[in-house]
Length: 324
Ligand code: F6P
Image: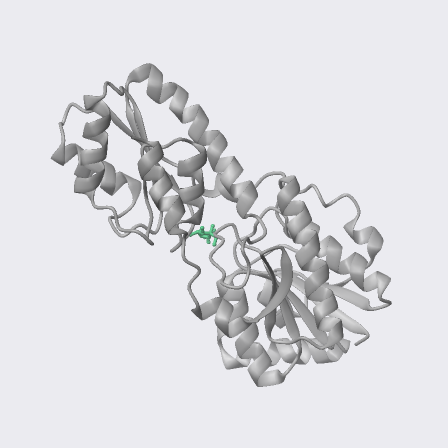
């Protein structure tokens, strides 16, 4: 393989730039020409594809976001869109792809591979950490640290005012960010889609705290929780407990997607980027590179998309025990 392209797609994640850098520098090392596709699948359809070299990725390892920009492409979900994308790749003679992204990215990559057989290897880039086939995804560690910094700050003011805070974190259908923030932030409770905690149970946990003279509490709510978003949960708690309870809600939102990647994310991104590239050059296709138990492995896109990666029961138990 002599000519490949790399792109980032879906929600951006801190560390994507470190991953692009590893792919581009790895390609240079192996004597492979490398292109960058701008704005994911949309750029592939439009032919917005630029040559990259070692210098193009200087001074980006520490930057959040993605220099290749990102998008969620509706057009690529159509057969016509994918045909246009294939034609653009053919025009440039691109023989293989490295896709950095999450669930949606790999769903598109699998369909595209099945139709056009262009070998594609993925690198897991999403703050949600919801991909089967890797213990951690690029950007997750930074997102947790960003959210945790906010939780720590909110705890100061919660304590000064004797308030209960419901803090909503991202994660789509996954509770990974929430559970890690809850443990590291010493939250009183956590609500995640993987383990249903009813509003009644949360009320009981808060009451137990008040009985022990706790004057403030933090509850972390994953955005995908089945009881609803943090606003809804907070309202339901107020209705159940005491209307004078001083409750506030903070939704952290997209702050969790930005910022300087942690050392962990830079190293993981570099390892997965190089791993994806070298896998592709060795003949891997239709798979995602991941790190499981500190080993680089490749998992079929189909499994990464369809199989569940459960939040460990241990962690859930830990929040309950340590907050009491
Ligand atoms: O997948 C990353 C993520 O940040 C999710 O946690 C969140 O649900 C979603 O993307 C938000 O998407 P958008 O940036 O399109 O609003």
